[in-house]
Image 1: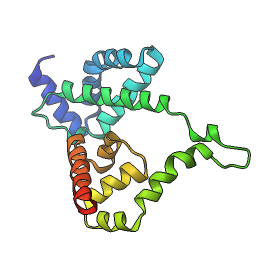
Image 2: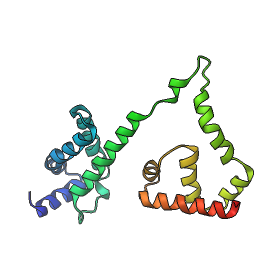
Image 3: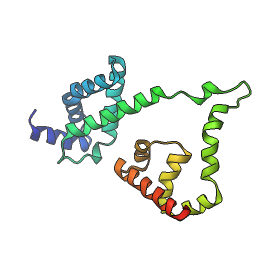
Length: 178
């Protein structure tokens, strides 16, 4: 399919034309599935990842800049979707370490020192001196345990913005506390 026809289909799909959306998905499905298959290593998980990719693309289609390459955009979504799925598969739920009485000594050992440090009065005061956006990044990272990619999605900001905001906040805290 030539680029101009594809661009027109994407514009029509952005305006809600279901048939155009189906044609766009049909055009990119083989490439997205192939990328997902390389990441997921089996066709069952690759199908799920490809489907989730197109759901995300559909939900964010109005945000897509039709002057850019749709293929790059949708393949980036596919890659991130696969990485998110793989990351979730590797997580061992803390509930697996719960005792019969419901306590979770592993989680307590891991998170209690972080929580105690995060809520010390001098640190709390230093954090309060940061911009609200920097406070939010620190809270999501240290209190809620999100990684930079998840924070980026939560705040709807670029990954690089989140990383640099985190780095600047840590540098500012070092200046205040040390």
